[in-house]
Image (cartoon, rainbow over all chains, first blue to last red; front, side, top):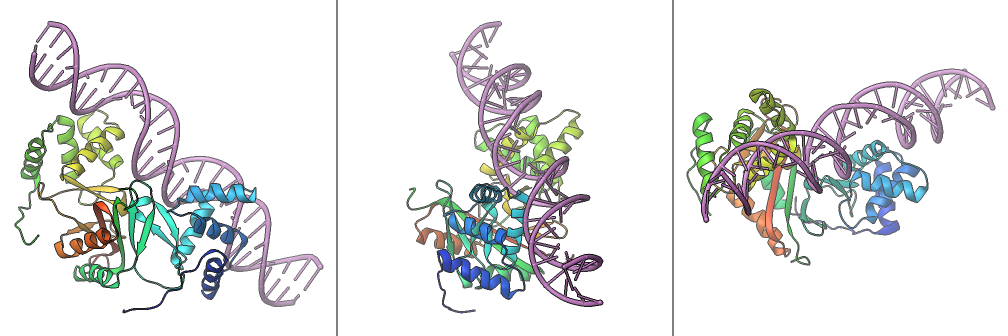
Length: 152
Length: 152
DNA sequence: GAGTGTTAAGATACAACATATCATTTTCGA
DNA sequence: TCGAAAATGATATGTTGTATCTTAACACTC
């Protein structure tokens, strides 16, 4: 708990960081995984598995099936390279892979952009409420739907 | 903000309260709506629109199409007779209709049961975070996935 | 370097969730 | 009772997610 520093990676650097992180867990950074990560990171808003499948298929001139995309996204989520936005059925690349914490997403109902917030205090409170009810293996889902400033 | 009393309705009483509430908003309590509310309230865990469609169709010996169910669930949600659990793509009856506040759902990954919590302080904090980012028309989605006490 | 086991990815099919559009029925006031 | 408006139905289709089996890539041993 407490403060810590983030590197906000982008582009090459982000992919490199993601790769390093995945390999640290004993997983491989394959061409398909790299392509899917690149596609995911290229979206400015949460992307569905099908969005990614389409983009990657076109970019490589070789079809990637949605189930493959789901498998790889699951792997990414399990290793903190990506997060799933539940209220949008979509995924976002983690811009500081390797740094684990609960996320808060603010999702605009108009433009679809998602803002990613950390609030350790808030998420700890949510965890505590769940723990008090006897829950274990807790995974908070804290999101806010609304209209963002730009779209107001 | 602050404390307030809840009646925890059940069975007939709950449906009556729901009806009163819907009619107060100038909406009608039709047979289909009553049947869908009854079905929804009968589930002990979040029910999908298709679950409800199937149950109601069987119970009445007359098919209710999923889109009708969605329409009516949307109406219920808009009038606080029901809540949508985003991380489960499913719905719960509100056991104290008419009382509006942000909900926190604890959903068990094993048995699917959902516990409904109120924590005004917590949800206000979430709203505040979003407001600070310039969001309006804020609708918090606060859920926790995990394993409940019984399933541990 | 051929054989073998393991992991990754592809193909296919289908299940589950959600909405769009237009037709029909019901309700209710004039 | 007529006509407008609201509610529901029928149908089709779009979107999201999984299950199953097959094939391909890789890595290790002999």
